[in-house]
Length: 312
Ligand SMILES: Nc1ncnc2c1ncn2[C@@H]1O[C@H](COP(=O)(O)OP(=O)(O)OP(=O)(O)O)[C@@H](O)[C@H]1O
Ligand SMILES: [Mg+2]
Figure 1 (cartoon, rainbow, N blue to C red):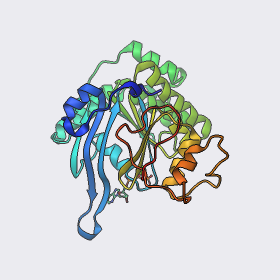
Figure 2 (cartoon, rainbow, N blue to C red):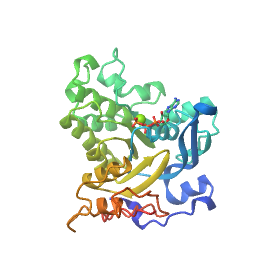
Figure 3 (cartoon, rainbow, N blue to C red):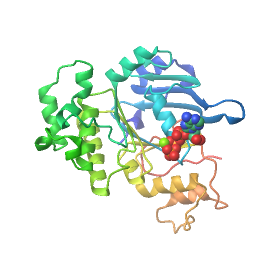
Figure 4 (spheres, rainbow, N blue to C red):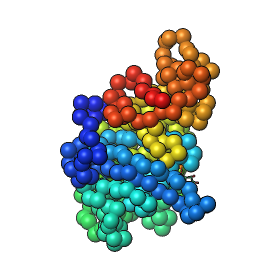
């Protein structure tokens, strides 16, 4: 459950990024983030002013229709791409102005990634792949931590196998262990269950949840899967480059309804019978057309499961 529910929200405009990070313990904070691809007639506004703070030790899901800017936002927050305007800070460091070399260093020190295509190195065995971030940064392996991690991802008897000798689920678990081995300040996961069957996907989701609950890991996950998002502490919905909903823990049904409403589809039973699914009714009422929803100042981050506030 979100620990943001009791935390007073900061008036963002009145503070610098560093101050906001310090007071809200945001691991990642963006201010007025915009991203324009191309120029002139071909210009695409992928992000149109994103202000968000990601709390430490939380699992945050980013959802939204195709083309809404999810990958763009994640890549900019992770320092893999630069914004057109606005700022990003990661663990108290303003990264937008960093030189490429410093940015690479920061990514190495503070950021972990899980990609949809596992990105394991085929010539290295599972153990070598897992400790690769430490090998690259010449950091000694913490044996106790390594063994704990391997126990959690259940790879004890697969450490000497190459990726080609592992199942898809095992490869993804190697990728999860690799992303956690250096205990990054923030872990970004791009569709971490996208290439897995539902059982393997569920395992990966449980691992992510466990790393948040047991180690206080901060995770930001882009996903199209309402079930994956439902294990999160917070769900951000993007549409046309703007965060249109920002809410605490949600059920799969509610998430699904928001996604459908953002795609302009209202559930057939939106008016409902008064027993649940009130969110669908709220989003589609009164003319069975999705209202333009905006993130409120409190962002609906109450996590009370009582539905979203939609504003016209
Ligand atoms: N390199 C690029 N050059 C031009 N336009 C781009 C580029 N990358 C993304 N875009 C555009 O920016 C917008 C946002 O793209 P983005 O990849 O962030 O969407 P997304 O929400 O991740 O979508 P999906 O769910 O399909 O992965 C889209 O309109 C896309 O076409
Ligand atoms: Mg994408």
